[in-house]
Length: 231
Image 1: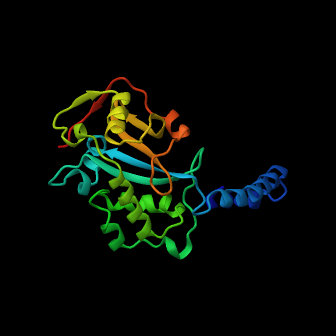
Image 2 (image 1 turned 135 degrees about the vertical axis):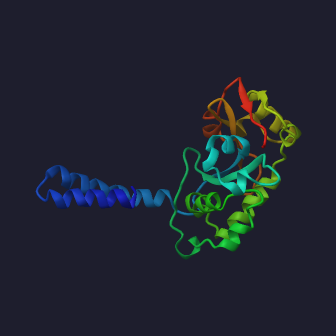
Image 3 (image 1 turned 180 degrees about the vertical axis):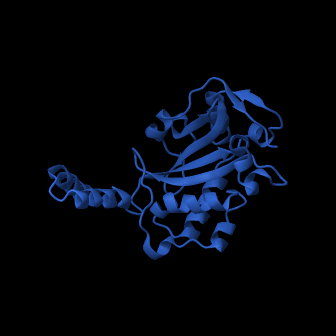
């Protein structure tokens, strides 16, 4: 239960002090809040998902609103890091309370911009996902880099120069062939309006490939995907 929801419930109770429904709502909020706080305890998770975003799809979709650092770079980006996400076997924690360790400075953000080329994205990823890793910002982004370097990008995606047609299965196969030990239930493709959006790879806490049925079953199954080129 979010702090906003708690305040909202309290406000409803204040407006209707003798409302039985308002009283019940407030009690439910108080009962749910400790459980939510426990579920999102920093460092309490099962594995990571490394989300690799196909940058040209984002830039094409965002248009004029796209982050210029990512979409107007002199050397166009292909796969970039969207994030390194702590996961439960089903679902995931987010926006964990890390206290003083939650402070993210510009210098730390600068260390990740070559593979996550957006200050806003880096800040958001730390607040929503990194805060649940049990690490401080410096260690979290260092681990993100190690995760990115542990995955080999297939040659076909390092040389895309024109719009290509493929399938979700073909994308998964290309990554598995380029990364021995990566099984078909440890990777999921994400698509958006018929375009390749992301590849999500499941890793243990020490960055080895591992199965993740929950992530895999929610992947894109499209037999016809467009892969836009960098511009």
